[in-house]
Image (tube, rainbow, N blue to C red):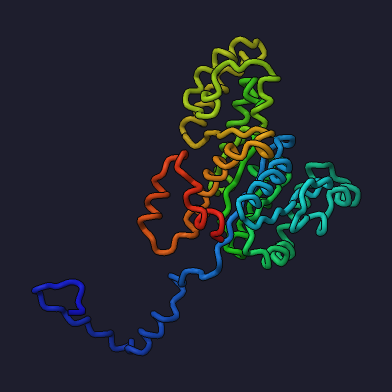
Length: 337
C-alpha cells in the first residue's frame, strides 16, 4: 500500500476554480512563484569575523588561530580588512591595502585616523565586488577576517556590517564574530562596565553568532590583583558588587546612578559573557585554543557541516557539553567544508 495515512472519511474533491482562472494559469503561477525560493545549493563557507578595540590582539589572534587551524587539517585564508595595518605577521589571501590605504586617504582628503577608516570602510562597501572576486576561488577555505580596531565601526556606523552582510549573501558564508577585549580592563570597574556595554552594543548591531573573549589573560596579574575571582568577570552574573568598588573612588561617586542603570541594562539583556584566551596559548597551549575553536564551530554550524542525514549524530553533538570529546569526530571536524 503506497498511502502513508489511512482514513475512513471520504476524500473531498478540490473546489472548482473560479471562471476567470484556468488550471494552466494556476500551475504556472505555483511553479514560478518566488515567495518561497528553493534553498541555495552553494557550498557553505565558514569563518570568523575578528573584531575588538585597538591593542586587544586581533592580528596576533588571526596569526595564531590560522596556524592552529592548519595543524588540525583545515585550509585557512586570512583576509586583512584593516587599511592601517601594514605589518602583517601572516600571509593574507586578500589585503584591503591593495584597494585603498589609510595613509593615502588621510593625505588626499585631510582626514584623521578615525575619519579615514570610516572612509575606507565606505569605499570597501561600494567596491565589495573586488573583495568577492578575491574570495570566490577560496570557497574550500576557512576564512579569518581581520577588521580594524576602531570600535565605532561596529556599533555606530553601518558600513562594516553591510560589508559582512553582502559577503554572507554573495558567498553563502556562515560567520561568527569573535570580539576580543583586553583582560586588563577587569582591573578597573569603570573600564569593565565600558567593555560590557561595548560588547553588548556590538552583538546587537552585527546580528551574528557572537563570542566575547578576554584576551591576554596571562598578563592580567601584572595589573594587580582582581577584586573578584575570574568567574565573576567571565560569567557577568551580578554586577551590583561593582557598585561598592566604584563608591570607593570619589571621582566615580557622582556617576553612581548612571553606572547602576547601565549595569542593569547589561543584565536585563543577559547576552554578554566571556571566554578567556592567553597570548601564549595561541602558539603553545593547543588545548586552550581547541576549546575556543569548539565554541566557535558550534556557534556557526561548522561542527554539523560533515553530518549528512544523520539526525542521531546531529542531536548528539548539539546537546554535548563544552568538554565533549571534540576530536572523536575527525572526519566531521577537520575535513568538513
